[in-house]
Image (cartoon, rainbow, N blue to C red; front, side):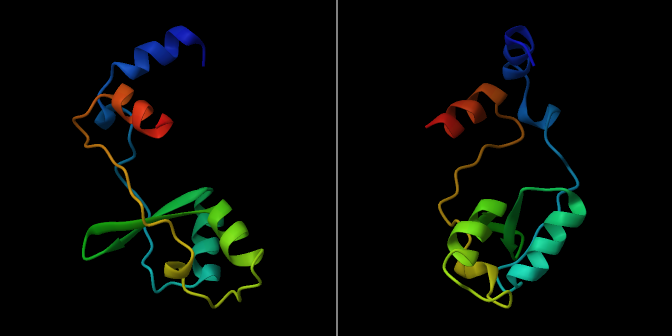
Length: 104
């Protein structure tokens, strides 16, 4: 993507570029279950949801660094390794706001 395309996308609303059919996990799922979801969906991260509320995120890097590198078993729950500090935007926010938030 060139600079002009990035600039044009930054002026869009998040709803214009976001995925509406999102695969999620819950904190009681195991590392193996989540890894299978990520593999089968060709995803590097998954939102962790409870009662329709976002409670965390897990990335393939979280699994490697916080689980495998520490010798955790595949039956370890994802709640033990997920990231709980969540920063988010709404579908009506501009993409540039999401970019700024990710940069911060």
